[in-house]
Length: 176
Image (cartoon, rainbow, N blue to C red; front, side, top):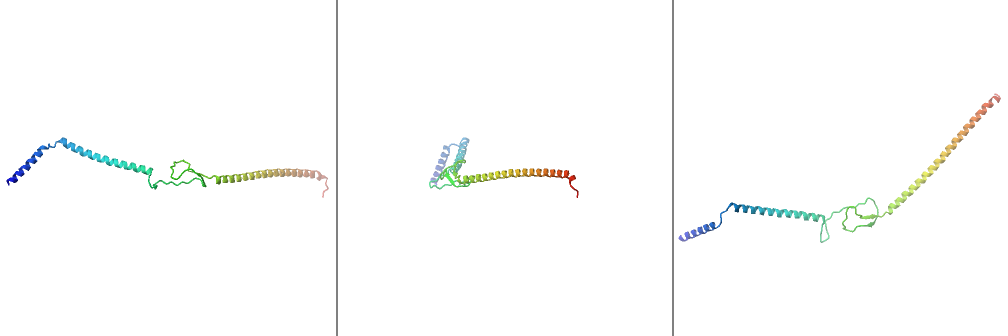
């Protein structure tokens, strides 16, 4: 037992020597440990925040400018509908070309519209001729009306003259 007692005493002495070799925990060392914990938490939080910001930035760039090695990309597809119908005479863009609002994309063949314009001009000319014919007929009718009015005035004057002659000759005529 004495051997055992010696061993226990020796371990106790080692513990006491080790404990006395370490400085006692002071408030300054506690504050340093807490600061280190806070700094570690802040660094971890900053790393997470930076990762989130970087992820959002990369996502927004790829959304606006998609890239791929195998030529298959997500893209915004916009249907193009002209305000006028017709055959395309000139195509001013190439496949997958970046265009902006207001850029010329294509020209429509004006032949159909020129033909329609010519037809409209012809129809307008025909209507102008009809108007001139109507005006001419109107003038002729007005002249006819004036001639008829003059004829009525002549006939009225002849009637009056005949009546006057009859009234003058009535006393000279035998009575019946």
